[in-house]
Image 1 (cartoon, rainbow, N blue to C red):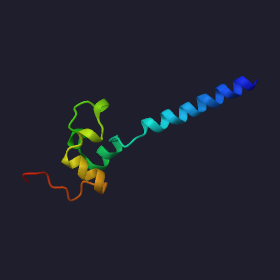
Image 2: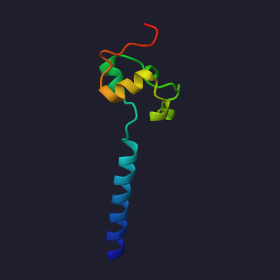
Image 3: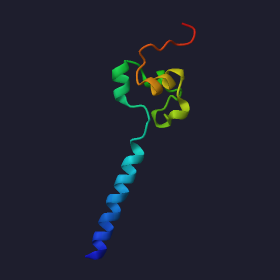
Length: 77
């Protein structure tokens, strides 16, 4: 019984850790809906599995700082 409680506790802790890791600051579909832009507007990678803060475009860096694309002007415009 004691061993079962330990296993359940460890599994619960593992689930919390993994849940925290997967909900990081990576771009989310809610951002694309809010801003009406494709993911690749803010990320240079073509594959969603590769999206991270390392592949942010200038627009992505602007969004990260301001939490909106309102007022963003792409270079050359």
